Image (cartoon, rainbow, N blue to C red; front, side):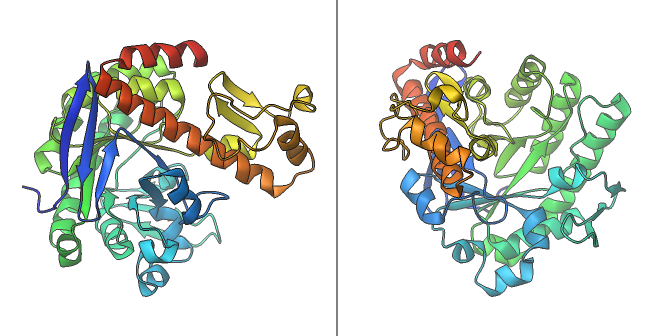
Length: 373
């Protein structure tokens, strides 16, 4: 049984897509919801005030980076992650598992040993320690430490990842529920489903995770380099095995087609670095598809980035001007384009919610696929 006040209700559905609402002690979150990634307690080039203006509901922080810089003790001494960032909205922290496993750590049944990307120092992270760090940070939604194998992986590697993820989830849940800071503050903890693209392992991992009992459930280990066609069926199998009255979170997904396909399969929450990463390289999301403003054809283009998004924070500047900023390596360029890309994805998710409410989600899905395929 969950001790957290987190609640979730489905307000409307259209096929497999659902429009819902999360209720926490901090407030409410309308779903589907895209969460900008604030890896080091900030979304690249943006401030908390920017995120408030954009209407972001949840920001994601990265446990791996924050435990190394500035350190959890520093953040806790300054009141926790919310006041540290001066962010009044919701915060979700991942466990750092994905970043750690990308560093090829030494892993055993107890946890993982890895080297810091900042100074090469050695650290050990266990399921219990990941909980302790996130509780100290005070994030509203916290992820368990899981094992995220690369794709493709041999069957025995995927099997071991499923088994260790389940064992670590039990330990993480026990640690979380035993911590009075977590329960008294109304924090929530999500379990993570692994299994690669093996449908049977996905079902098994989902069943084992649900049996432990969490406030919400995440789909991990998909969209990590494989083709979209390879993860659609594993995703559908996973969501079908998760409770309908709990929120579902697809970790690390942010491309427009991927978003609408996942929403259509019953996913509620998403995060991705895509809008910020593209912006830093001069690429923007538009109603006509991706556009790289570094192209010479934009040098004397007086149109805004996307006439279809009049509310874009970048709408006041022409494509020609923004190309100029990129050409001279002006830092303002990355900031303006990031504001636009985040606004564009938030608007897409807003439209998805409206389409579900009006029973027109299939039309929106077709429109996005037609443009972005």
